[in-house]
Each structure stands twice: as structure tokens, then as C-alpha cells.
Image 1 (cartoon, one colour):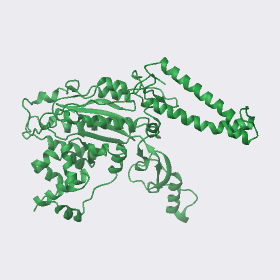
Image 2 (spheres, rainbow, N blue to C red):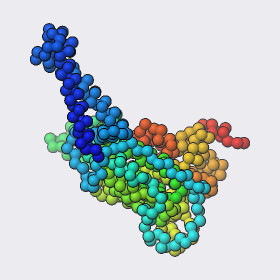
Image 3 (cartoon, one colour):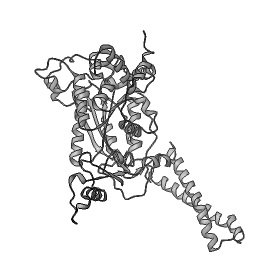
Image 4 (tube, rainbow, N blue to C red):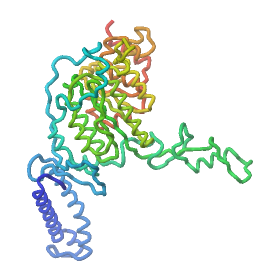
Length: 492
């Protein structure tokens, strides 16, 4: 147990232990089990009765202690307010865990709404030249996103530590990770074998031998030769950790949406804390993107990184995707078996292209086109991507088309594509001004092979990560009857 109050907490714990002891002692004297076994009430029980009494009272005392811990962790005042519960285990804190403070309820401060509409710059901003891309964005300049004192109060040693009640503890301390290993081939318990579709992950020896025997048949002379076509790989069941890359837009156009960004980050923390899922933070604004925290399981480090985030400047969305790919490539150099999940949180109003697109020889200003090109690199790298849009105005599309956000935008783009006589939804979005300025989330998801979400819809889900992972395994397919049904909503 760890708390800023120190001695008062120890005194409280000793008092509770004493209460538990006296409850146990009283039970031994007045237990009806003694009477059933022939021991008079108010007399110390015999050895068999003592054993049975202890077995019966142990779960009750355990429930009382758990209930007390649950109440104490939810209190906002008093000597035992917000104490931390440490799980058993030999985990050691990572370097830099100097914020060993008690966890307190965190109430984000509501920022002022941004005045005027979000940025819709489609021409090169004034003063943009080659030197603009030479200097790195100053993450420490601008209006603060998080209150540093609030982050300090939420920080605690993360080596197998959980807080906030026993119910949350059971959720956050699950096995090893979030991703079912049936989606991979190298984790968990082997359940079957299959013919390899690419690089062989783990050879399933019995199935490989049986395949070689089936191929050779009775012609074998006693020696068995295994060829490449005989190889079978194991398919595992279990869970494997994720490497989550949170790419956060801290440009000025996000000022009115930072409340949802804070809540979204808190939900990600609650779902990854206690597991081996690793989380990294990339922030982007002005001239580019900066990795402010490499992937780690230590949420103390992530808290300090989030404390640096400040809002200002423009929106280099393509550069943010490029930076995230650099991070994933570096992590794959360390461990080629990582399972990356790229979560892009933005209002998807790109107004800064890649540096090479604004240099000499490039007359057209192309922030949106560069975004599509970079998103296609994400697909090529086989990275799961979720485009989380914080723009509340986008909720009109799901209401109008009566579909989830991603399907609604795909349906709208497909209808316009048919009207214009085109053959690709991305081409349609780039051609139509209204779509190009507002369909950024779907554009990224479509080009990267991922999925677009509204942040408000995700926050209503019981588990954000489970929603993102389950959706990444399916692909949307529009049917002809869907198009005919939606056309009834459109004005004639």
C-alpha cells in the first residue's frame, strides 16, 4: 500500500486487521457449527469444529476486506482516500517511476470551445517555404492539453499494479494481451495445424511427418524424407500483446475536442494497464510529427509524455502517418513478431503536405493527396489502423443514412461515385470539394485498409480495443439492395 499520507494509512490497516481478528474470534465462540458438532456455544471449539469454522468464515472475511478496499479506493477525502492495491508478483518498476503517488479520481477541466470553424486551409499558408519543414515542431509551445497536477495524481508504480477497485482490477489484469492469438501464429497453446501461407511460424512436427508419410506411401524404403511441401505450422490459441501507437492531433483545430481526447486516452489506459500491451505516443502539429514516448508498458512514462502536449499550429496529417510507420519499423527490428495497432485521433483536416511535396518542382499543394499515399504505405506494411474522428459534425452521416459511421461514409461516397460515373471511392472523394474537406477519416481508413470511427461512438463501447480488433478482421461489402434502400432517403 502506498499513499502520500504514510502513517495514517498504516494505522487504518492495523485497525482493520484487528477488526477482522475479533470477528473471527467471536465466530469461533458463537458459530452454530459448534452446536451441530456437539460443542456448547460460548466454548472454544474442538479441533474438527475449529477447522470447519475457519473454512466457513474465510470467504466472508475475504469479502469484507475486498469491500473495504473497494470503498477506500473510491473515497475522495480522509486518511485512506484513493489508496493503491498492489497485485502479488515479483514485478519491478521500470526506470523513471519516481511518481509513486496515490491514484485519485480525475476530473478533466473543460477547455473553452474554439472560436470559429476548424481550419479548412487548402492553399499553402503564408510564409511556407523549405525552411518550414527543416525545423521540428515545438511540442512544448502552446496551450496545455492536460493539467500536469492531475496527471501526477493519476500516476503510480505500474509494475503489476492496479487501482480503482477490484472490478476494474479483474479487467485490467487479464492474461498477457488484448489480441486473440488465433489471428497470429506464434502465441498461446497449439490447437491444430495448417499448411503455411507465408513464412513458417512454428513447425507442427506430427502433422509434418504424417504429410510426408502420406506423400511417400508404400514406396518408402524405411527412411523418411521431408520436403518443403510437407511442412505444417501450428495454430495457437490464447492472447498476445499489442503494440499500440497512439497518433494524437494537437493542432489548433482540435482545441474544442480535447475533452473527448482526454477521455479516450483514459479508456485506453484502463484497458491496457496490467497487461503486456505496449503503448507509444506520437503528437503532430505545425511542420511535422514527434514521437514523445516510445512503446512501453510503463504508464508513468506515458503520463509524463502526455504532460508535454500543447495545442497550436497546423495539421501535418501525412507526416504523422509517416512517423508512426518509422516507429513500427523500429519496433519490428527489435521483434519481428509484434502486433501493431495504429490509432489515429484527429479531426482529419490536413493542411500541410509532406516536405518533399512542397519543395522545388512541386507546383500543386497536396496535403490530401499525400495523406492517401502515406495511408497506402500503412496497408502495405500490414498494420491495423483505426481512424478516430473527434469532429461532432460528422454524426449527421450515420443519422441520415442509418448506418455506422464507416459504412455511412462509404455508402455516401459510392452513391456519388455512381452519379459521377467514376470507378473508385477515393477518386470520388478527391474530386468532390465537400467530401475532400470532411471525409478525411474515411479516406485514411479506406486507403490504409482500416476503419473509421466517431470518438463518441467508441466511448460508448464496453471495450474500445475489443471493438477495434474485431472490426479489423472484417471488411465492409455494400450490396446493391443497400444502395437502392438508401436512395429512398435522397431528394429527387
